[in-house]
Image (tube, rainbow, N blue to C red):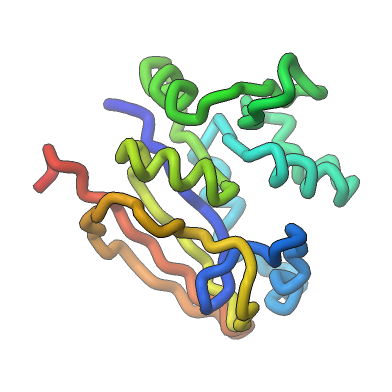
Length: 180
């Protein structure tokens, strides 16, 4: 059985993961003490994390070691950086990386953006599950989660979970041609 690539990400109701300046403060409106929106359970099923460089830099700026996934392999996609930064390893190509990881034994692979990486993996039909937490907020503009021009892909609804904060989490499996 192949390792699955799981996109687990949040977006505004109008489809943005951040403002144009990478500001993600709108995510704070759903923060509630003791509520992790299923993140710990999800996180237990993965052993590898893929982030874009801007996502990595944003998480580093929080100065919160618990967010750095020290217990997992962490890959940062970057065309300009090489080597490693702490336990994070830079890699230039998300598609090649995922294809390589899928040949290895392990748990599932967690992709948390950014949008360019999501687009590259969707173009190659390498994402197996899409889990999107919709934040009850309209940003109006910014960085779209799903870019224009991606290939059409059929999704199979798995579940939706609504929370008192207004966040709604949507779970879909991507139907790959062999599955249809």
